[in-house]
Length: 286
Figure 1 (cartoon, helix red, strand yellow):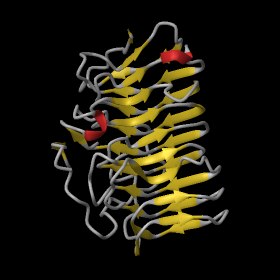
Figure 2: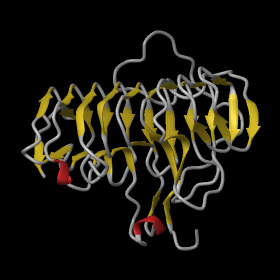
Figure 3: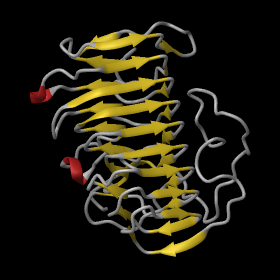
């Protein structure tokens, strides 16, 4: 850690379930926050010390305060009403690892927040999962997608870790994203709040393969150089991209840059506005 200079670091969460305002009914669009995400108020948590590898199909993990990493090795696993805090790391890893793409993973009403912040810690890695009302903060990439069939719903991705000298970037600043998509199809983000990233709110890289059928609707998104950054690289246009009915902040390094994309990727856009002035968002040529 000596080589990394920490620029932004939130205080460590307490050991009990976070105090949150009780909510009733349906969460309003694009207002996911402390009161509507994470462990429900009053939930009793049991401490689990060490890593947790889930190898039983259909397992339900509920009411745990996990002081380690979670690795998914079975289908149809549910993690709910829990906090995942991780541990010290010596290489990049994730608080929840589904790089094997085990299908049917659900993460519900939970918080991901590392007790040992470092340039190596990320939130969720992998694919074939749904995250609903999840609070992810204090990590480099909140969600790092490496395949298909991912839904992020009514969740709060915020407060990314950022290092001015990040050893994983050769001593350059961290490339922290709320969501990074390296490969995959059928990726949906809706009803969520994304803020506090320095590179991008959503970064589509196509580093591992084709990305297609990406839908981003009814969210509030802010931050990054540009908030949604589409990069085709060697895989060409990204087909089936829909970005509609969102509100965007103006806290971007590039002025008025909610969306940047090559013109060869055709994006269906409608009813995207900046706050607070309700100016219509346009796509920057990238």
